[in-house]
View (cartoon, rainbow, N blue to C red):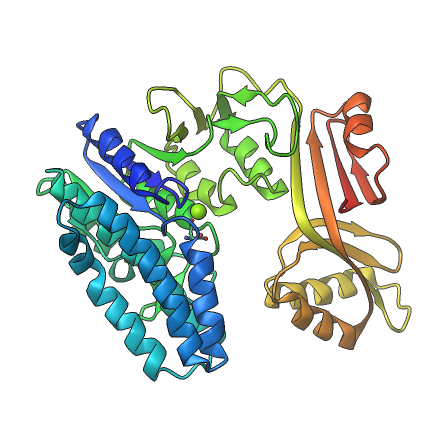
Length: 418
Ligand code: ASP
Ligand code: MG
C-alpha cells in the first residue's frame, strides 16, 4: 500500500478536490490518504479559539460561521445535491457550536486541540463523501481513535506501539482499497484530542507509512518538487530530484518549509521513500527522499528561516561554570518549547536563536530569574549549504548581520529583517 498526503493548499477549492479524484482514480494501489484542513482553515479556527478563550462566545460563533460558509461554498460547487455534502459535516459543526456555547476556556493548549482539530475532520468528511459520489469507494477514519499520542497538547508525539495495533486493525486493505484519515490530529490515551504541531500532517503521513509498512509515502504539493531555494525569495532556483534522509533533515531543520522536520524519522527507520510530487502535474516525477542517492546535491542550497529571535543569557554572578549554566538554560528553554535554530557560546554567555512563538515571553521571564537576558527580535536566519564567496556576497550584501557561523561547506547568517 501507499500513503498519499494532500495539504491545505491542494484542498483549498473545489477544483483542487476534483484533482484529487483524478489522481486517485489514475492508480490501482491500495491507498491511505492523509488530508489537511482546507486552505487557511487552521488559521481561521485559531481565531475562533482566540475569541472563545476571551469568553467572547458570540464573536467566536461568528468566526465559526465564516469557516462554515467557506466550506459550504466548496460543497455547493462539488456536489450535485449540495445537501449530501452539507449533511456530511453538519454533525461536526453542531458539535463545535455546542462546545463553544457551553465550554469554559480554561486551558489554552487543550482547547486549541479540541477545537482546531475540527478543520481536518471537516475537510476529510467532505472529501470522503465526494469520492463516494464519484464512485470511488472509501472509508473515513477518525484519527483521534487511531493515533495515540502523549498529552503534550499542540505538539503531541505519537506513541507508535499503541497506535500500530489500532491503525492496522482499522485500515484493513482486504476490505477497502482506500482509507481517508486526518493529518495533524490524534488523541491521548484518555481520548482527549491532540494536535501534532503546525504543518503536522506531513508527520501524520510518515507515521501512517511506518505503522502500515507502506511501500512509499507521497506528499502532493503545489511545487514541482524540492528546489534548492524558495522561489518566492530567491532567483534562478533549480530542482533537486533526489535527496538523502540526512539532507532532508538538515534542510527542514534550517527552516526549509518543504516538509515538517518530524517527518523523516519514521520513514528513515523503515527505509520508506518519501516522494514530494507536484499536485498540478501528477505525471511529473517531483523529488524523492531516500536512504542513499545516485548523485549528491551539487548545487548550493539556500534556506531562510524567518521570524527569529536572538537570546543571550549570562549568569548573574559572572560565574564561569559554563556547563552548569548551559544545562540550566536549556532546561528552561525546552520547558517553554523554544525551537532552537542556532547556538553559540562564549566564556560567560550563551546565545541561541529561536522561532518567535507565543511561548517566548514565558521563557524570557523564567530565564530572567536565573540569568541576565538580552534579546533581539525581527531577525532572519540564512543557511547556505555549498557556500561560495559569491553567494555570500549576493545574499548578505548591505544587510546588518548580528551573528555568523561558518564551516568549510556551509554558512549561517543571522540578519535583521529588511
Ligand atoms: N492544518 C494544519 C496546519 O495548517 C496541519 C497541516 O496542514 O499540516 O498547520
Ligand atoms: Mg498545510
